[in-house]
Length: 184
Image (cartoon, rainbow, N blue to C red; front, side, top):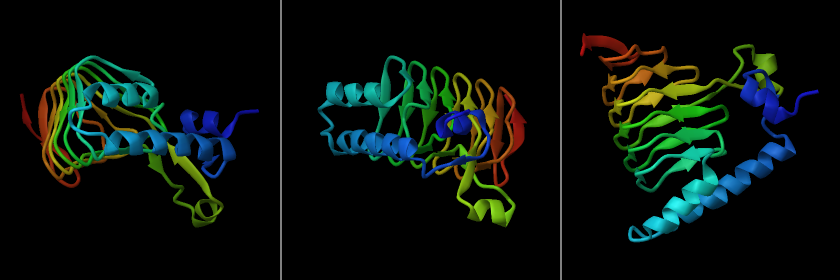
């Protein structure tokens, strides 16, 4: 029998109010609070907190507070990563970010989604699908990346875009819904 966490990561219906998941979110919130409350000069403290929070963390990482996530341990970040102020990673499933990725302020990743059937949704069951960001990607301010999306290497996502479908490599994509407007 699968645990609720295993169901969550597998992308099948799970109960978010499972005591283990609630406890994991509480641990993450404590680490996030410590990170967000840290001084700008406390780079080693910030790095240590992110190391405890994330599944994996590359070299030369900058995340400007405030930052928010659900679990943290479903986040994998490569080398040379920058996220500006106010980013949100709802990591009920894996969020994998490649090398040389830059994000403007208020970029949001939503792996969580809910059943369309009202009775199932009202039962408290949820779903989550992974998000994958390739290498050398730039994501503009306020962009929202929805569950199950993959963004290819060297893609540029315009500010304010809502990315509901996967984006191929080496393109500029913008809008709501986000669509390719230019090949690079």
